[in-house]
Image (cartoon, helix red, strand yellow):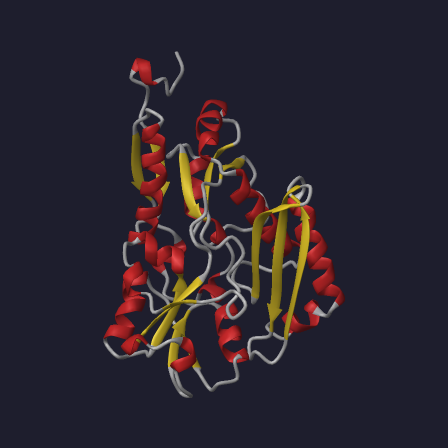
Length: 314
């Protein structure tokens, strides 16, 4: 008998998730998709080191939000896990496989501000909260005297800092705000030319044990090949630059129809934290090898001095 055979009343599939409202919302969408395939799913909340610490993410290190979930997978306490793809280390995890990358939400950053002011309308001295070095660097690069304030906390906590007047605005991933049903609070969705998002922002990673053949086959139905290709290009760029998920690197890949079929257009950038130095480049490549598009753009950025610019952020 197949373990997850719906006709035979198969076993409940245990989905591991962080306990934040956003993580539960993201995992809930994947759980619903699996249920639509005719299977029973139970959400299992796992506490991670990132959830238990108030330190800045850049200090906590790469993978701080995923290691506990991966440990639970390898210990067979859960059957699969859902991650924000941008939180995953770029190196593969032994014994695990990202079996599906569902269709991506809007990858752009969003501004939530007091009095519905746009980023251009916020004057010198305006306090803008964000936990990302990448966003801080791009705010500094505007040269408008904005004050970037490092913050931690869930989406509700960050938005409350604006409502309470502690901050003039916050910058968050648009996907997270929308997944919590609060998109109507967004003041402005930021153009990637102004604020290039983090690699894989807006995408989810569905991960399970590499030897669980039956579950690999079941979950593969959730994979969106265009989204997977885009985030593969972005994350390969990040890996080739030997930069972690909290590094001042932005990337955004889009799949579009070219003369000979679908193509990947990848934009990438590296920043110094004070915004004084920025290198922005782009590359186009075939859908057949998205990783090579990322590698090629990383070489281009290095040729233009990316290592020196990122070195200033150490």
